[in-house]
Image 1 (cartoon, rainbow, N blue to C red):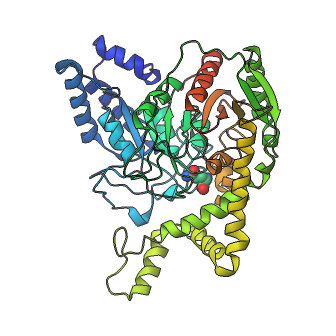
Image 2: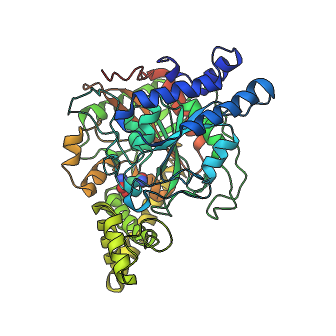
Image 3: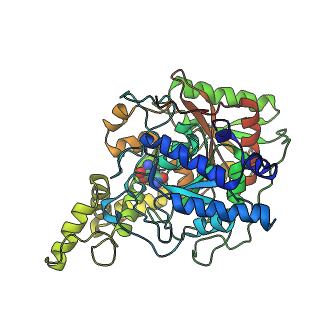
Length: 499
Ligand code: GLN
């Protein structure tokens, strides 16, 4: 079983064909693993019956109909902010604790159409606001790396898609969906030693993803290797009539090359990403991979993204403004929590929203309203939009014209996974400002980015790097990442020792 948790989709399918394994038995193994590791708190809801049923359907297609689909018998976790028909979708918030949607998010229905089997809905920071998966009404998610029972020094999983990252890294599923607004897929992937891909904005439908920041949200993909991420992307990407912001052009599936040649690929190292607080180990890992790529004949160039330093402030203003508007729908009237029938309308709004949201959500609504006040609107919101344009233009410039590069290489996070104690002693705003320093700019520019694990730190925790490229450069990013993956041979977490 432990070895199985490190198999690729291709290897699992081969094992099905060779009858060394069947979809139903694999689904059972994953469910067992999820239960065995339940104290990591990766799942909000384990969908056992659904998983078994999906496994049976896959098995029939595999062996009886002989007409299998690309993800048949492949177990998945879905972050609990994607709507799933008849399966509760909570956003880890009191507000939606009992909310059961009547429709599926497009990404989930596409995974299902491809044969994937749903193991469960995964934990997150309330409404995906956070960088640690510690602010959930179901309690924090724990990082499996270095985890020991009854040891208080356990590490955070990263966030906000920490449940999805832990479900994949601990072997409870092969792949998972996260969402990425400022780094929420790449950040937990980095801290849990797996691959996290944030596709180009609009390449993957947001329909059914409960919105945080509509202009930046992208469904993300978490897997244990690059080939699997490419496979999942090929199943979920492409236009969707239900999301008017999806790119209208037909999606051309990405092709993974067995032997990708890095000669002449131009890789930029943005100097502004050498920032305060970056650990020497991260810096060293960044240098190590830069040298490694140079040895493979890639062309390395130092580049500048001059507006990086304002990016955290700009992100935080725009985030809070959109959050304010998005959270207005939770009023106790249509769906979600309703505190009492006896109140006046105003009292009902106030009591529902104060009981339904945690401090983080309430404080973002509060600041967002402040930034949007008539007297502040120009000073904050409009200014932040102008700066966002400059941040986005910085990327356009490095990817075009004289001296251009094809992709950028940076760290994903500034350190390895902090302990829960260390992380939770800081305010949510400071946690995000620190953790998301390298990830948020890609969301503001809408460009694709992925995180790939490289090696272990002195603490025996994953250290990861990020690749970013121009819009729709997923194929190049994935191929370069695969080359790195093949060379560095990052160790897989074979077994989570819970004894
Ligand atoms: N940490 C960031 C925030 O809280 C990003 C969250 C996300 O990507 N969902 O806003």
